[in-house]
Length: 89
Image (tube, rainbow, N blue to C red; front, side, top):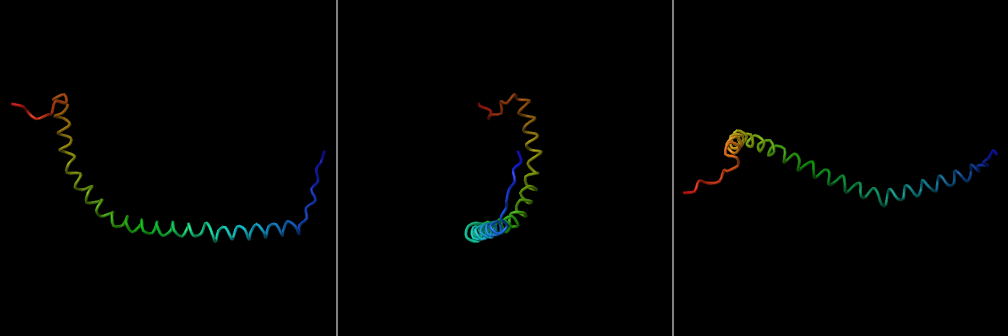
């Protein structure tokens, strides 16, 4: 059984234009305002990231000075089997 479709190109063009108009309306009224809000927030985030970057670099540099201390504390803690509390007495 072979099915044959008879397409009305005029009706198809009309429907296409209706869909385009509906799409344009939804985009203009619903999605674009949200996109604009998102873009503004992203812009604010980029400003904050730029402000954070030098502070983060300094923090990481200062944090590096703790690595040898943490390493030595870990070695001592293992040697003391976790008994690292203050000495009583």
